[in-house]
Structure formats: C-alpha cells, structure tokens
Length: 412
Image (cartoon, rainbow, N blue to C red; front, side, top):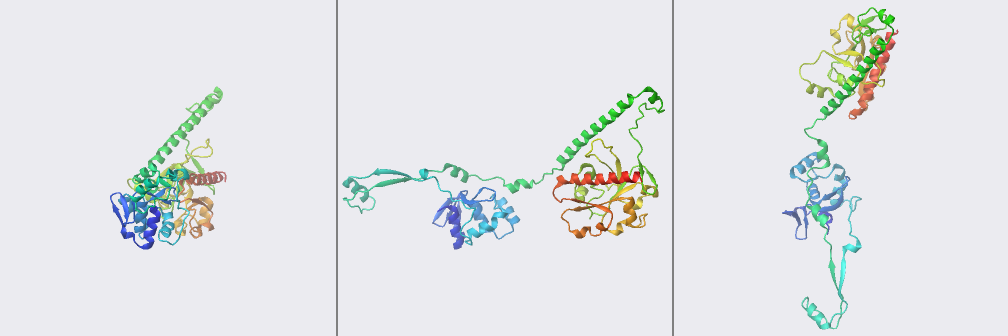
C-alpha cells in the first residue's frame, strides 16, 4: 500500500494515534512502515508532491488557525500545506470524498515494473520434489511447473528525494522578514533626478549659447550685465482671478489631519517621485519635528522641455498672511466643510473658483466617502492600495490639472 492510501485508511478508522515515528520512518501499527520524507501521491496546487511527514502533521493539526499552523510547522522544520489545499486534502483524508484531481498514483512503465525470468518450463520430477518439499512439503513429483522470479526495480530518485528537506517554502521566501526595499526605490529615484538635472542644465546651456550667437547690436541693447539676457533664476509671478497678482512661490495646501491620504509628511514623495507612502510610515521614517513647509517640484513630465516650477506645501492655513492667500493655487481637500473654517472666502464655490481642489481616495473605497466632494468643483484622484506602479500616473494627473489651472488664471 502507498503512503497516501495508508494515511487515509488510518484517518478514516480514527487510528492516527497508532502511527508512530521511529527514527526516520513512520510505523502504521504493525501493518506498514514508510520513510518520513517519502513523497505521497497528493500534488499541491503549487506543483510539488506533499511528503508523508507534511500530511501527517497537517491532519493532526488541521483544527488550528492556518497562520498558527504555518508557524508551528516552521518551528518543527516541517513543510506546511498551503491554504488552497487545506479543505480538499482534509476531505479526502477523512473520507468525505473518494478521489481528487490532485492525486496522482503513478505506475511505472510496464517494461520496468516487473521483470519475469523463466527458470524452467519442465523440471526433473525428482529435482522438483526436492525443491518444493523443502518449501512446503506438498509437491507431487508427477507434476511439472513453471517457476518465475519477480524483480522490482529500485527507484533511486525517490530514495534521494525522500531524504531531502526544504529549508524554506514559497511563502517563507515572500515574507522577506527584516528587509526593506525603500532604499532601492530611493536610490533609483535619485538617479532619475540626477539624469533630469543634467538634461535641464544642458537645455539651459543651449539657450545661453543660442543667445551668444545673436548680433552684437542686439546684445548691446540689453543693457544688462549678462550679455545673454538670460536670467536662470527669474522671480515667479502668479496671476489669480480677480486681478490680483501674487508675487513669489505658489502655495499648495494639504490637510493636517491624518485620515487624509496626502499630508505634509508624504506629499513630497507623491508629487516629486510619483510614489505614495502612507503617512504613518513616513512619520516613523522622519527624524525631528513636523515641517511647517515643504518645497516640491515637478521632476517628471510627459514633456521633457517643460519649465520646472517650485511650490510651497503648507498645512496651516491660519498661519497665512493676507498676501499669502494670493499665492495659494491648490488644496487637497479632506471632504469636510470645517476644513475651510476662517478661510477668506464666502463659501466653497468661491474657493474652488480661485483655487484648484483635489480629493485623493483609494479606488476601492465606498462611494459614500466622496459623496460631499462630488458636490464641489474639485478633481477626484484615485490610487490603488497595493499597486504602487500606478502612483506615477495619478501624480501626473495632479500636475497636469494644476498647470492647466495656473495657466488659465494667469490669462484671466
């Protein structure tokens, strides 16, 4: 009998307590004995054959929580049964089902399974009598018999595999305890920033060189110390609706509450690198007090020749002066009316006519979370909870909307 059938037989009969481990083998009472690491005919959905040791440990511990079972099995050094295999495997071992697609009783090829060697077709009666009488004493010398010898080939690969013990299973490898891949992301981002910085400097050098090729009369008419007439650090001007002109760096406001996705802690990684990092993770990584102001720039773009503009990000509207409000170009909303308390505007209609509004949400959140926001003139940006490679597209959408809004205000 094979190990899987023997284990099922003892499980159905309720005789699991009669299976005893002696050194490197399991003894099924006085009926059978198998190596502990012998592969059974039950194949995991991951493709490997479960060993007798794995199945016996599982059927004895199937009642405990799966995570606790995995931890206990790992402590014992025993490979565990995967979660998708738990129920169908238990149903088979306990007799609830009689067969399963996961079971593969492999028969050896006919030529190798049994070798028959004919010893003799007719034997001398006296010789046969002597041979058989020594066996059971019931041989008639007048009979002639055919004797066969059965030889079963040794499966050396099965013997080798039965002695192997995996050091780590697939789940253990994916856990990656004690490893943090944030440093890899940071390194890759820095290389991209350096590449873009070099390209930007090359474009500036090209503009300077082009200016110097202009006629001497045109250079003389500039009247400035720099003969190229090129100012690498112009003072930004922002034109807002209503005829007001805000001098200085434009401002983006974010909520100070932690229940929003974008805060002053993680806004820089999202807008500059196109990567969303939860606020609680950033708080643990940051050293020192919370910053009052964060400067962000658009470091990636669909248009490589676009001018990079710096923005200030703040989360304390009460600290803004009257002239500062003229520089506010965007706000990430929390979805609550009280966020705009004491703002120098009549209502949210006036706010979102003068300021670009964004509402960040997870794509699988309920519609109720954005019920109030949908009544406002704001752009809803959705990101995935787990697919971080999609963050860049969401950040680009924020930048595109913001730049379009700023251009429209500048020409109003």
